[in-house]
Length: 121
Ligand SMILES: [Zn+2]
Image (tube, rainbow, N blue to C red; front, side, top):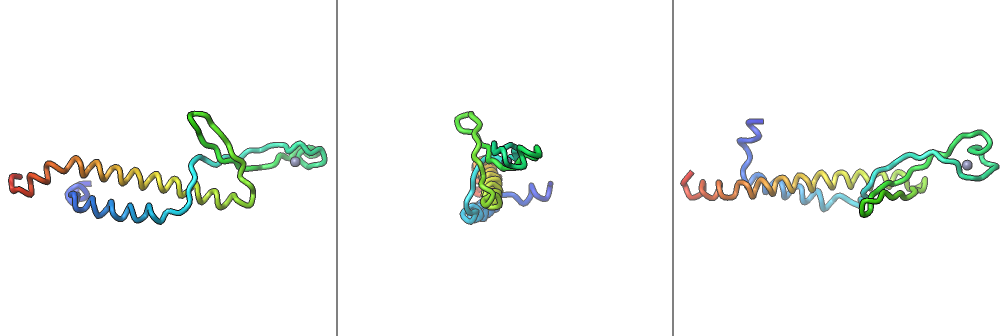
């Protein structure tokens, strides 16, 4: 922790921010929300879910729009892909948070480092 603190300066933060922005550019498709497993009956009276009581397992992407929870059915063929997009979204949010943190630290250090450069520190 101490070593980490000692190493930090604006130049270091800017380098870190630069590599984070590159990561951001390479992140690929993303989608927000969370994936939920839902068990349901399809309504077909000849189906095993009706005859044997075995419910179908489906996945839905749950998300909020203006505070209202919504769900979109994920077709079986798309499950893996949507999971990847959703993971990318989480990664995106982490990177955005790190860039934001670095920028706040840059703002915080501005005056102090300017004084140091003038030899007043
Ligand atoms: Zn069924």
